[in-house]
Length: 128
Image 1 (cartoon, rainbow, N blue to C red):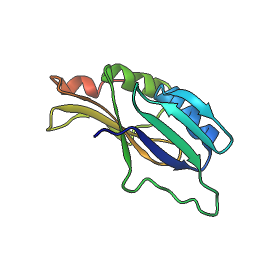
Image 2: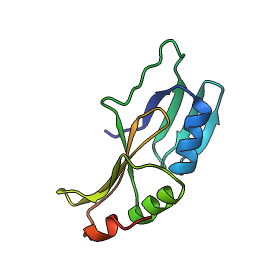
Image 3: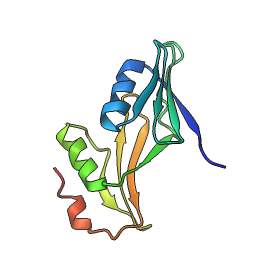
């Protein structure tokens, strides 16, 4: 079994689409007024679906999307230069992973990570 598709409810589809396309390099494969579909990798897609304002509330509780980064430190530096705020700065974990947390425009947590690499903790805090 593998994850094929995820769907996020968002308050503003174009704003969220720009975030996932520009910040996380997702490819737009469908775009409609109330929905957009992004290709995350060869097998996984993400749908951004508009939630009407009277039904919308922050959905960040209990949701965290994980994006594996081949070039973790370079990606973190690129995002920092673009002015993106990190909710948790890049760090080394006890599990032998590098990770950093950001939020999408609706407050969904997004974890950028790289697993199974020797971690030089000093370098994770010197990006900028």
